[in-house]
Length: 116
Image 1 (tube, rainbow, N blue to C red):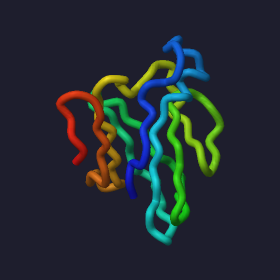
Image 2: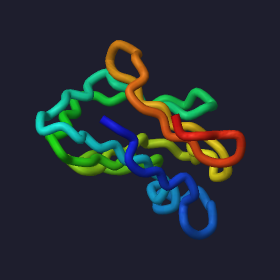
Image 3: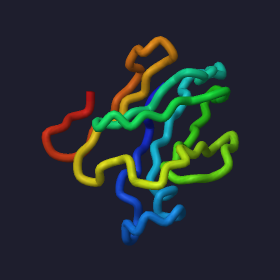
Image 4: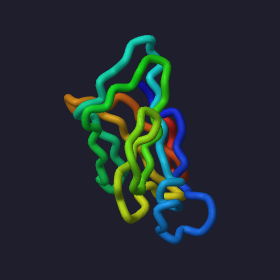
């Protein structure tokens, strides 16, 4: 499991519309051949905003995109249902943890950060 891509800076003006919020996202990829149950896993930013996965199974060799705004969850897209941006455009770290709280992967961007 890895954080495979991050779009922290929503294209266009940051006007907090749902469309703009949903253009901010994090992708998580299951690189194994086996499906993984993400129930209880979390995705967090440096400021402590946390998204908790509920009843989500990620098939083997597949990717799911977690959008910031509101929407209807599907097999390929999940929505945090937030009304404000989460990911800092200039510098932040996304942390993926399993249901036991163990760090599975992190992705950092911006100054003073390096990929761990």
